[in-house]
Length: 316
Image (cartoon, rainbow, N blue to C red; front, side, top):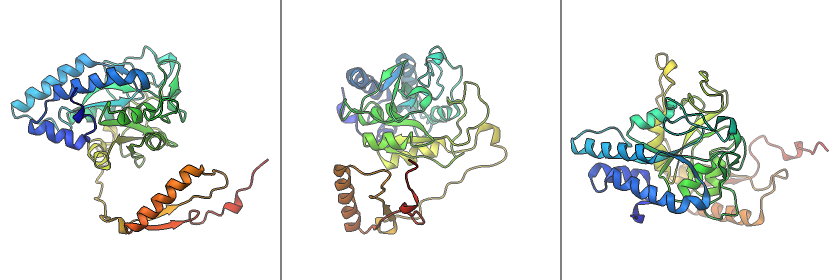
């Protein structure tokens, strides 16, 4: 196993693939070996299609040799959350009633990843209908946190975050309403981005039910990775209106206006009486505060503007 590849960023891997320093097939086999070695302990990847992935990896290598370029993710093996439809693998969203749901076409966001050259080799675990802060269901069982198998990776994109942290994949496609990207990213020490509503289409995502044509009111899709740079790489591929809306509008995301840490304002709220922070976590946040200030960050400690904690009194 080429273990030196396992924790390179997706940006580094696609550069190596495009330069010919590594082949897509060799990288894929490394990912498969890693999954076979480590996944039984954490149960992050719950469905795979290795043979189709091998065929696509070979095709990606052949295309490069012919001078063809599929896109910014050409030949990169990835996994996606088991709420997105991917042909060749079941899409259950953790629900026993969908155990035999095998979609005929990919979700819109998955198609964009494929169009950019990615290779989807597997799906990652979620709670029932992606509706919990952990990642257990009656179809695939429990996903553990790779840093400590006795702890949860969070949810609902828990399998996604665990797979990234364990070096099983370099990019993941998650989704979020109330923390389903952000909580697992925090629990597993990886990066996740909850996008603005409508930036990435959710056609082919469960829930809603398979075949739903409309977009949900609150849920969003979002990239997950091991570096912030990789989030931008993936978001550039995914962002855009749904096919049904493409004739009416487009997305033009501006570049970030801040380039230095000193240009950022950071609020740290460490004393919410309704959600007290563990002593160990408080010490780590205080260390973070000192580090940010040392590097020029503008840190304010206290409640959010207009949030009077005295207004929140218990109902019982």
